[in-house]
Image (cartoon, rainbow, N blue to C red; front, side):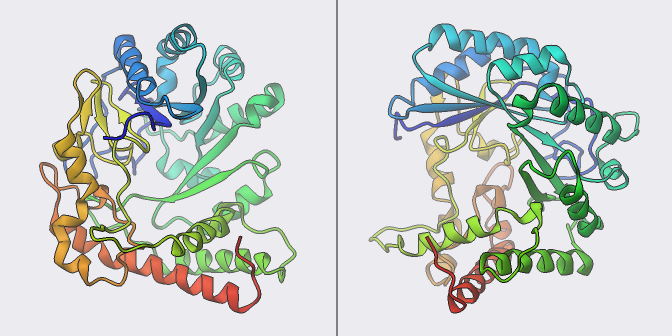
Length: 384
């Protein structure tokens, strides 16, 4: 295990939430079911989590500590105490803070705290009211749009320095009109200058197939093509804020092509370095590779803040390609595969069948990126 290279850690400060979003990982739609609970992370576990990352990050200049839920702002008092502990115990360390929130609980006390500590704030927000309120609802079934939009307007007006560090997380659910979402964010007088990150509903381990219709595909391809034309200087109008990162992603892929080296021992490119890249600590102090994996799946648990890492579990996740070794050895997508352990979560073990089931998706993604690179290069685009 490489020590000293941690750059970030996420704390699941609670599993409680005041919303009941229909596509949520805790809504009961996935295998090895996760559900909302009344569990909160104690201040003691928070402090141990901070100690855990600080003791393993002496080779980096800045640490990022994220607060996650459930809805983390329900635990704002413990978050305040946690940051007070960091300031006292690690005053010489540079720390950056983030919080991922549903945006319904802001008040002046919270906003002043976020401003004082220069938080980056990620607000989940799905677009216009008629689409947002389809899925992002309170426990009584009522929509959350009006409350969130009111809060966002208030932050922009009264706390502009906080608003500068706000980004929005948009989930495009199956059957939802992407064109409508795109028009909403691009035209909004409140939101159009902030970063918007678009995500699809997670298909891994879903109890039912997640299928997007032709309208989504057509709209997505149209907006993506405008971004490519803009990169070539052929399109002068404003492009979609939802696809702002597209060219950056292609640039990163292109750069990776020059870094490919086949060693005596190699593995597919999908796995991260579990525990070092973006680990999350649950309310109970257990450590998982990231927030995408299911904390009810024992195979994904890679340690605990009291006992440290389970190196056998870490090794298994890092070498996830072993479960499909023979297929991976002859696969053209070996170095471009984006399937991590989350794509083969079998609960108590890594699932070979699930990994193979998701192979086609990984290959399609790689082919599209190769086509994009060819299109851009053939028309004079200069990669960095």
